[in-house]
Length: 59
Image 1 (tube, helix red, strand yellow):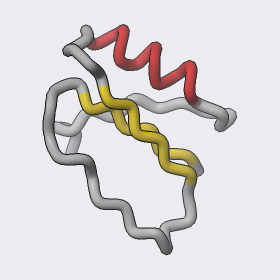
Image 2 (cartoon, rainbow, N blue to C red; image 1 turned 30 degrees about the vertical axis):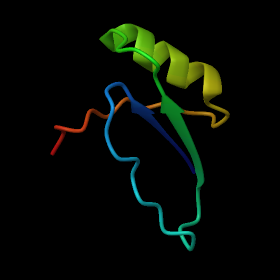
Image 3 (cartoon, rainbow, N blue to C red; image 1 turned 180 degrees about the horizontal axis):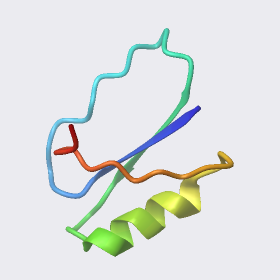
């Protein structure tokens, strides 16, 4: 499994447990980007066969 996190606004980076069994990529924007542009950038980094967008407000 692969997890890609985009920080669109300045904030603390997420804490990742090194024992987790997945590849983690952190994208930090120099300036805020739009909804689609953020997901397109993440998709370009993705190497997994499936890609799912999940916003931080998803429950």
